[in-house]
Image (tube, rainbow, N blue to C red; front, side, top):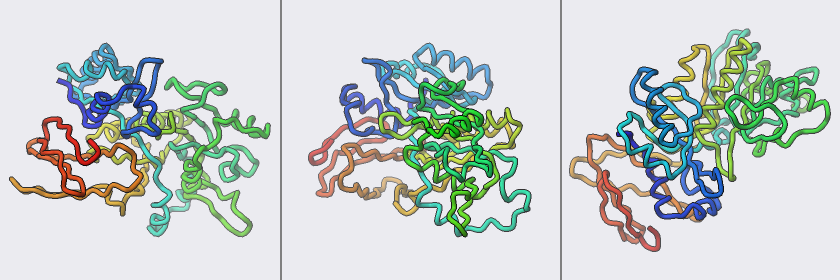
Length: 389
């Protein structure tokens, strides 16, 4: 029987309690996944599926059977499959004898603005001069986009240093990439547009996060004030940029991220270049183990070519106590206090992981000591605490 991942289980519980229109009417996603409307009546969820077995023929057979049950597949790396499904088809994807772990694709959130000042104090030793500037190497940036008109991403002649630009949300002008969504541009098209003095909406970095990351990674400092050099780590590198898809004021999810990394490697390979892909996005949900779906997909992309590198930011949550590791003795009890800040939305998701051979009973208590009653780790339990559920 196919296994259901914990995040997908949370999605299905949410949909048991709310109608589709209620979910879409919420000001922000209630869970760290992307739920989106495909038609007037259909609600879809992005999925990240890990296939069992090691033989590609077996994986392809399972993938075909999942498609018959409603999976609309996208990138397939081998053991990992990215795709989406109508929420009405989710039972068919789970209730079968296929060897697969089906889970919702977690969203990724921008990271870097807090952690970079810390990283600047970490020395990397003496590098050979031929390595120091990134000449001949492609730096891939999978983020919110980039300010293409910025002087630090253009050479001494004013030409763009961006070899390829894929905006996953763009429509209209540009070429549709093989992934089937968004639009892409090559360097010549970017230069032509820049020389016209106008910037398409699709070229605007909506948050500035991607431009910041690009500057740290590969800015050449040409926009620096006189007497200063605010160049990045690899100022002579060329760039391939992916602006992540983020619909309905939400963050992009892991499917978009994996597609973006694969795109950079593919395009750099066509140009005969090595690529280093920077991912300054983070996922808080999940077990944080190498066998997770996102980690599996990225590992398999790297396994295709030993010249590719993925660099991930250290994140912003180091001092926020976003994670805890606790030991529960046999037949013992441990209390874990969770601080929920004021003005937190109506949904709070707490992710607990423990060895499958163990048993764990859980109870939620409010600050006044009122509890939900005990639920064991293998059954669903809904209970009220105070004015909430």
